[in-house]
Structure formats: C-alpha cells, structure tokens
Image (cartoon, rainbow, N blue to C red):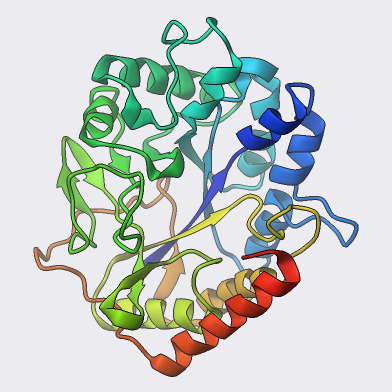
Length: 324
C-alpha cells in the first residue's frame, strides 16, 4: 500500500503585513486561510470538505508565528476547523514574522528569513515557542515539522529531535536550488534516519533535461500526479509526499480562483479515492517509516507528452491567473 501524504502548508502571509501593516488580520485570513473570492472560498474549509467527500485525510502544517502580533486566537481560528474535521495538524514555522514583533520575541529581537539562519539554541527556543503556541491554539502535540521556505538545516533536525519530534519534511529533491540546507541530496528520496529523526523527502518526478520537479499541485499536472502515484505503487514506494498551501487554489494575487489548479486538486482527490493500493495517511495515525531499501526511490520517467501538456497548461495559467 502506498500512503500518500497530502500536506498543506497553512499560513498567514507576512508579505501582506509588510504591505498593509499589522491591522490586516481579517484581510490576511481571507486571502491566505479561507481563500475567499466572489466565486466562493477555496481555502482550508473547501479543501477539508472536498477531501472528506472522498474519504481522504490531509496533513495541515500550521504556522503559529503570527501569534507574535495577533495572539493565539489568530491560530485557533485555523486549527479549530482542521481538528474538528478529523484531519492532522503539524508544525510549520516562518521566522519572517519575528521582524514584526520587535524586541518582544522568543530570541531577544533576533530575526532571520529562515529558521536555519539561527543558532542551534535559538532554533530550539523558536521551535519550542511555536509548538507551545500551536498546542495552546487547540492542536494535539505535533510530532512533525516543515520549515517555511523549506529553509531548514541539520541543526534544525537536531533541535527537533532534542524537543521530541520524530519527523521532519523540508528536504525537496525536486527543487535543484532551494533554501533547504539539510545535508541530503536529490538521490535521497525515501524516508531515512537523519540527525536523530526521520527525514521525509517531498515527492518528485522526472522532467525535461533529466531534471526533477517537485510534487506540488501548482508544479505538476493532474496526469503527472496520477503517474507519480501509480509509479510509487508499482515500485513498492511506501510513502509519497505531496505539497499544497492553504491559498494554493487562488491566483497569484489571491483575488480569484485559479480554476486550473482547483481542478488539479479535485482530480487528485478523485484519483486517490479510485486507485487500488493507494490511500492517504497522516503523521498522527500512520507516520512515514524508514524505507527498508537503501537504494534511491525511482521516479516517474519523463513522458514528453504528459510533461509537455503541463508546460502548456502552466503557460495558460500564467496568462489567466498571473502565474500558477
């Protein structure tokens, strides 16, 4: 059985605060969490409802750092509907929020774009603050983590292990140049022991030029996502991690629905529900385990027609929605 982890990075936007000031919580929630548009909402409530319709479970990596300026209630507004619907809440952290809190931060006013920009001790402090805030907002004690911008390093893994976390999932083999500085390579594509916990790589497929492309709903077509799941099942890959965001079904300006990406999400849910030997899993109920194989997980080989369709589809999305 291949377990698909539909992971949703669930976060307010720090860039909206930079543009609009700190009094933007309601607007930020509408654009980043509920994804409200005149055509309807396509944020976490919509994503949860659609997954529930097909008997699927999602993993929502929630960033509690906005509590620094808006209090825990702002995080409760996110956590409560996820927990009530029976989905998984795990820890996300965007350290950009520290710059809005002045000296009243857990690390004495120090700031950085990514958690890897901090010392081991500061990372422990930030992770402990974030976990405590997430629990105070109503989440069960998290066991898994993903860094904002994928910006983790080995000290992040060690800090998480020291705090009792069991899983980390910032390593993205399908992005050649990312903010992730965890000392793994693109051949590390299966869950493995690393720095005291289990590192869970994000899925990928082969694309043009022999490169890899990450398994994100905005990055792959419905056909590529389906192929990745079928390939994982056929090759005995136990865990396949897919990435999305709370606002991912919106256009880049977050003002209207990106119907191309919305249809991808809907097709993904329908495909998983209909595919024998494939199901969804969560870190709370069925966390990824270390692969019995020490060889790199094979990836879907390039299909020029399938990937070419995605390139064409992305070009249309760029025209209609300002990028997808």
